[in-house]
Image (cartoon, rainbow, N blue to C red):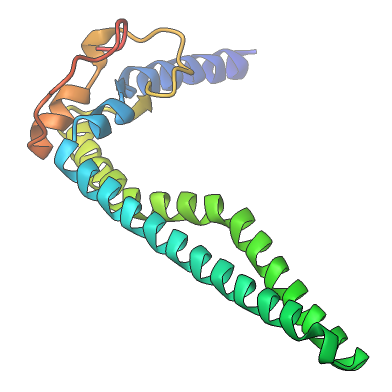
Length: 178
């Protein structure tokens, strides 16, 4: 009986001590990112250049298709059946290539966007890590996704992280998330 009481007391003391050592803060990573206007402009410019490159590649494929189709159409009457079949298959392959390229275009843009944003998120992560250690937070939750029902604004480290990164607040945080 005494052993159970001592075990329960130890559990309560251990839980209380560990809870007392836990400090939870919040951060709005999306808000920080939207205020990194110079960096975002570079990302968007690079993304626009990549999109233009993809469009140029698509246009090249379309021109190739049109050229092959017109050549086939003009010479079809003088071709043997085997030649017609070969050229038809060539044209069908180019059509399939164009359809696949169009289908993958949005995925390629999304991957490129993620690739270009990764260094910004890493920079925010490093600054957040340093700020969390400075303020002795054991956990920091991201409130940018809106999944968190309520967070006391006094535990929000968003502005401190932005200040440590040298990011100027150009727009205000949405209501209830400061």
